[in-house]
Image (cartoon, rainbow, N blue to C red):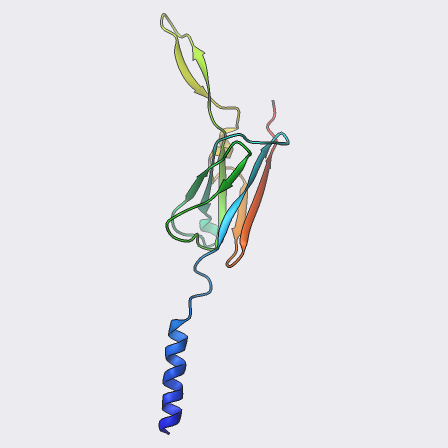
Length: 141
């Protein structure tokens, strides 16, 4: 009886040391293309998808000159479904509303791409694997 009790106690102790299986994903990275070319700069945001069980905070990353991004946080990124928003880098133009010219930020992206709830872009982050996502954006000109 003592041996059985010791065996059960050891089994419970080992079970308590196991890591939960669905708490974090490894990496989330990828590339963004616009009109078939890498988006040189900008921002990408992964926001948890509430209708598909997502909760928590959104995670953002800068898009580099090659269109590449990698989400990095102090904690690991939870697995689950995310809505994605992408913003191109603004370019500056001179606006002359009166006597003094001013610079104004202008964007070529549709406003809906800048909002996770309106972009229509969704991805599932899966535990224990490299999650690599490409986005191909076509903007009507």
